[in-house]
Image (cartoon, rainbow, N blue to C red; front, side):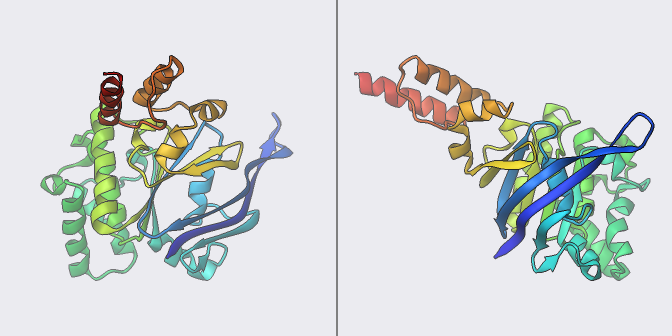
Length: 287
């Protein structure tokens, strides 16, 4: 089942001069078409200004198309009658959890979304319990968010979205403000929700290491969709990625450099384990 369908999506932003008058417009998304299957984990890569965050905001009607069409399940995002159906289907998690957490107690923050949806009280607290358990934050339910680390706050923000029972979670650079431990916590949580709950995940990121376990990778540049494939397919094209000002995982880069020196290694090595196995296979072949 297709959960997300973008057909020839266009989005333009007005540009302003120093006097505050409109001086022109820039194209943020240019003829983007893509379809995403239910239950998939899709990572979106792109340099700053590539259009990836603009595309994310189209997936729950925070922005509307200037051209083309966006469907979330069967709902056209331009159809105001289905605005809340779209936002219940596709939940957003933003870069800074402090901008998304509004209550003084963790459990109250997680309850905020379903309460605004009119969910009965007994069901709300059932969802709060379930969501906090799923992100590993049940022990912190009575804490103030101010007492939490950045990674813990982001997991609370994810729990708040989870409590609204979305079928899709869109995460717009959710680890950009976190330390390496916090990043690891959040990415592990997202993968568990995808694998165990069957939630469709769209992860916008600029960290290459967060992409290697995705089902699919989309690469944006200049508002256009430039590459679409599995992580192995995408990272096998290291030189093309560099054209779009993107890196590859360090182990992939090392393997590629060794290959240029004549060591026969496969393309698209993504993990240290794959790298070690490939080196052992090369060594054994020389014997």
